[in-house]
Length: 188
Image (tube, rainbow, N blue to C red; front, side, top):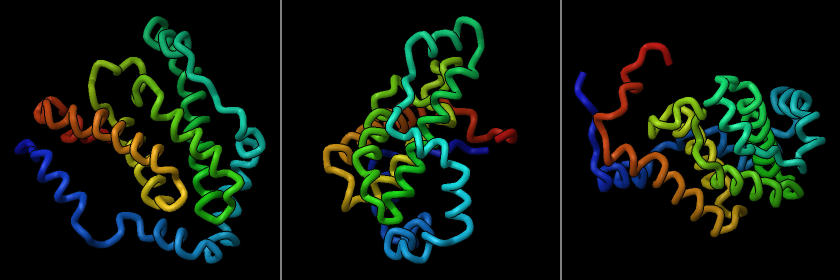
């Protein structure tokens, strides 16, 4: 299988080429939130996330000790619990804002910003890999938020997200395009 290699210019050209929306439902939900508010799937999402929404103002802390204990004792469950709690609360805040509830906008800014503040976006036991699968997944989540809510997310936050994606995904990939074997994996 040949290695996929793109220059930075080619990637930027691909990303700026107009075309079909990447997630048409997301574009539609932003444009017509009233169509989505009362859907069974939306109600189910907020019912299942009710405990997280009730506690959304308490942003979970990823401490150094929690991070290092994964490497020291290979116990990743406490780290993953905090990380997953953050990601879930970020998604719920984003959905609330997408559906027109701007009471969650400041919290969404905080969750997006604190995600950018994380030392890295991968599990500690693989932090030597450069780009591990959670890195582009986090980049995609943040990109969807700033794209879908570009008229609501503050410019400083959008700029920070773009810079973090550049630094954490594109730059490492372009520096070492042959260094990532996972794109060939059959277990993903």
